[in-house]
Image 1 (cartoon, rainbow, N blue to C red):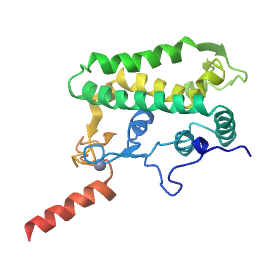
Image 2 (spheres, helix red, strand yellow; image 1 turned 135 degrees about the vertical axis):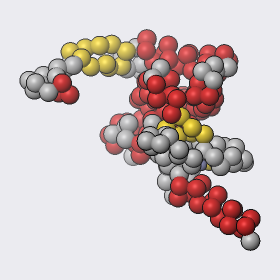
Image 3 (tube, helix red, strand yellow; image 1 turned 30 degrees about the vertical axis):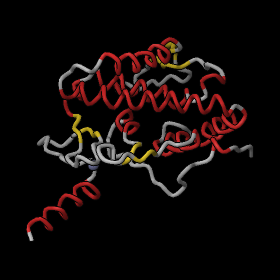
Image 4 (cartoon, protein in one colour; image 1 turned 60 degrees about the vertical axis):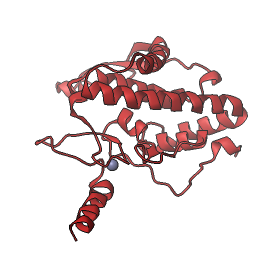
Length: 221
Ligand SMILES: [Zn+2]
């Protein structure tokens, strides 16, 4: 197996957290303690591939293919990681602002839009190879949205394409009004509040919610 430093994970023991409840949001939550002393969890291209594999947007064979491509083109892999991180940070600010005021900063939107144009310019609708004959709408024949292979210049494409699509879907849907920022200010992760009462306060009750409870308990003594 071909490996290089950039295809390895920087923290093999770190388990990625998907409490955001939406693909694009989960992507923005790959930095720990965002509101305090940020901790980067995507330090290598291998980290990005591992995240995508764990999130279920990249099959194992696809992840192995990307690692091979990155090992053969380390400079391209580094550049792809840089673009992914730039997109992630702009996306965080755009989603947060869209949920709060509906008016993201033009500079952030420009970064996201550059990736949206890049992604959608290579998308094509095509007929499905297998045709279902079910009467059920869920399984009715549908067209498929596929992405042309952009070649090795864009090694992170199989990861960023679904993230960008998910971001567009979120930002243009009513769900954007359900996006909240974790009440733990040092965390500041985003999540989609799907509770009926719309009262979820923490990205993860087990971590941030508990920390708050402990703080309140200590403060009460
Ligand atoms: Zn949190």
